[in-house]
Image (cartoon, rainbow, N blue to C red; front, side, top):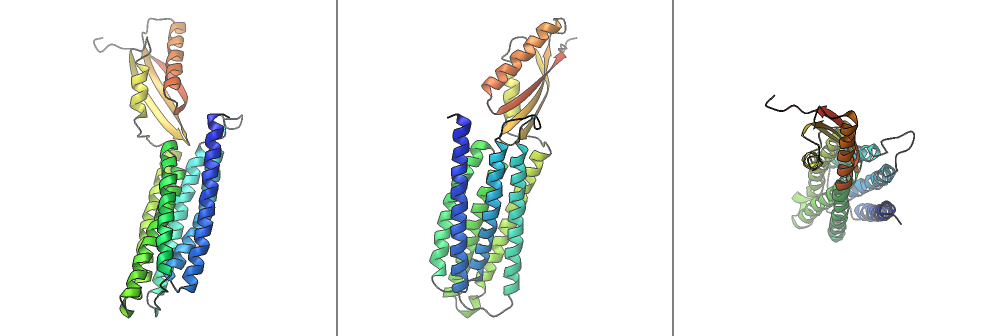
Length: 297
């Protein structure tokens, strides 16, 4: 089995596990929230329902992005990953809007205190979601994936929503009648956090789709490694863009203007081979040759 196949299977397993956990949490929160009279828990369950759909599309996008280049997509399918990340961010913002709307609608009305058992359910949800967020976040960092980062933020936001709801329920249970609305205030506060996180994910995904500047230190690594090749006298432009899990780069290498075209061609190939071999994150590299001009000339 190749490393790519192993990675794909690992992602598939993690994706299926994530969606199953989201589905279970959704059912637990909705049923407990309705029976236990907790609007915050019902709102939390609605967000989990959105998470199930968003997670499914996110993991499908990440899986599709791993496909190798073909005749119709010579640069591969990596952009599908950033598109999935954008959808994930929009899904977060939509869920936040829905939770905020439900919370505001319930604030003026009469409130019954939630049942006591809604609190331990929420504490358990926070723990599960925190573990999920950490697990997916580690995978996102390894792959530098905005889609997986978005999914990790989904889990973290869900944990924050549940934590805020648990604070509201605690106040509603212990603070008497005047604190019965704390359940809804907790859900409203969480919705604001979720909306901000969703906007951050959308911005990062847009940057990648629009070939925004990649600030990963890869540019300096490319420049440093290029000078290790004999015949490279200087470097002009170094452009880097990200597409899914891989990077594409364009490097302008300066060589002696008096050498033959064949010699310059060989230097360019040496640079390309050396960089692709030593920097595995670079999926494709274009090397342009430029005449070196001495500062003294």
